[in-house]
Amino acid sequence: MRSLVVVPTYQEADNVERFLAAVRAAAPAADLLVVDDNSPDRTGELAEKVGAELGRTTVLHRRAKDGLGAAYRHGFAWALAEGYDVIVQMDCDFSHDPAMVPDLVEAVVQGADCSIGSRYVPGGSTPNWPLHRQVLSRYGNRYTSSVLGLGLRDATSGFRAYRSSALERIDVATTRSNGYAFMSELAHRMVQADLKIVEVPITFVDRAEGTSKMSARIITESMAIVTANGIRARWDRRRATTSGGLSRSHTAAMATPARKHEATS
Image (cartoon, rainbow, N blue to C red; front, side, top):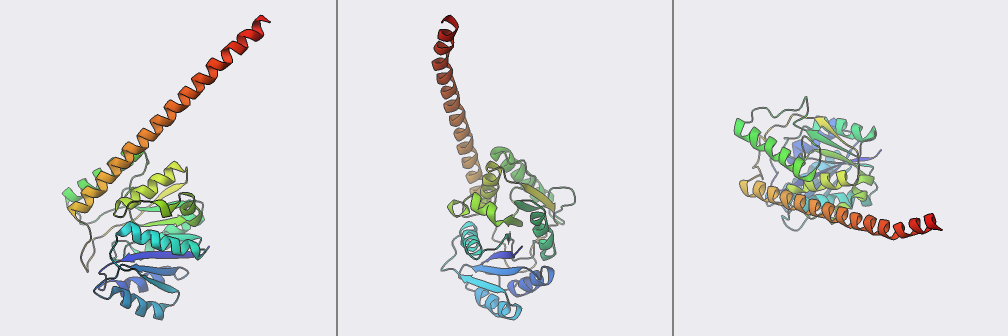
């Protein structure tokens, strides 16, 4: 199966060259795709340089910083058009270990529609995180999974591998989230489509170089989107149940006279 690692970048000049080399070393069969949002620190140019040395590396240069979800939609559309079978998404800052790429790909090869690199299944970990960050992350994941009915331990993980047909089935191009809520939106659509999701334990570490893109505003925005999506999903289920109940009642009411007529004739 042809696999592709999709990496969105913005201001990752300190990491991108080492990162791409590390992914190629860990997963030599995988092709590489960098989706750069016009980084002013020349991340895109550096990716082009090291990509030419590594081979089988493509860099998409976007016009401006437009959000994580938008970058992934661009990258996934390119990957699907190119006919890849397995598509991996991951961060460029080494918080996701390149050595785990083969494990996530193998889970899809073995039958999963999506494999999620999970911090919160047995074997997963977040070393050196302070207690308040662990509590916030675990609560956020439990809340997201509960509100959206996902049944996942790590619904917000951005380290994943997808079967291409799964992304096509959920119509990934029509997703709306541009921030980190993109992860939970995809998970929600996959659960609704009854696709097979497995969680693979990973060790998540903080970046050593560059600046984190995470902020309180982004976290708040993501939780608001999750809440809105959960309310919308519950409303849709209630409306479908009510419509179905009315339809069944109407059918039963129409059928009753017929049964009585047959009994008395």
